[in-house]
Length: 501
Image: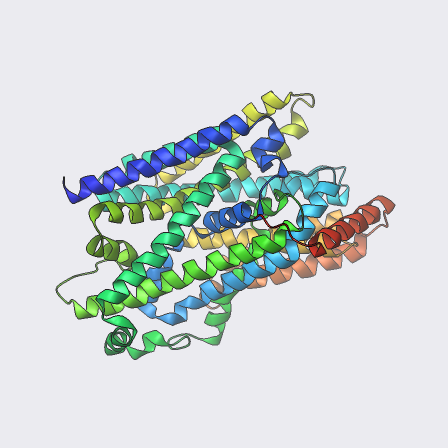
């Protein structure tokens, strides 16, 4: 058999495994709570690996190694900022969000939590935040579909359309029927596959380059600045890169994992597992790029045309074709895990946050699950149409969407959990301000000097606080819920952990 045949066998086996997991989740899904939040029954290890896999996407295996290969360790500040941001998110947001969403009318989406938390009878807060999620994530999903099409185009010589349809079709199937549980369990398998690939590839490559000392010498021969965390960068550049971590607190597809935990105390074990996974995978991606520099310096007859494929090319050179196919599957896993998570959040925005406001109030659990599946299908179809225009979804759009969510939702989430005096109008004003500042800044020359999430987050936070002070009205109901949520989070979070994770 040819090398490509072995690789295709590995990819097909991966697809079969994902569909099998989706079928298992389908059998466990009974009502809308199951479909959107897996009945709030996620173990911390499952939530942590799922959050990591759905967060990192193809950036971890393609974008980050490519950037390090070209510019050196100065590009690692994004990974450092993301790791710190994720730790802070697990530490300060996860336990309170899990507690508060349960206390506040069992909120199962971020928009419904905002409405229930602030007792917004106008429904405006829920609609605006639902629309923001729907618009941003539809384009975000389309960018993942484009990545899938490009992957098959470059790896197997297929057409872009065929590759996009394969990735979109398989992801849609297990998400459509398995819902949140299907997306989460496949995320766990995909996260473990990504971890294995990012540990094994650099270790084998390091052996080929003669060990640590010889590898460092080869990198220095290419350019000693590649081993510097500051060479070629500026203070504002480093701040901008590290500021990616600010975005975590506003990402709906990550926050929903916190809401699905069994209890607030699971956040402690989840933090340890999740951050451990992030550190290992980020180090693996950075190491792969640096060792790749040494490998191609030592083998000048080999050519790396696209720096973002350094991880893929090393695996194809160093491993048996079947094992190289499993590494290719890890890249697909990174892409598909993000698409599935975003489809579920979009579906929840359509059904839970928009349809329930204008649709039937007495729909049965079975009908609501069916509507959830129709929501997944609708968003996937729209995203697929957008993805057909490959120029419409680029890497900058992913960064733009990350900044948009971080600035629009991040300050409101933090204030909702830690400040009693946040008002409905303060939350709305902060949300809109963050989105607008990100849009204007991100489409101006200013974006070249500072990542738009920094001014967007700061402006959103400031406006939300100022407007809340001006419009705040005391509410016994809000204060009682706030105190109950905080007390529950503290009590559960400080209790001894269970042995199982």
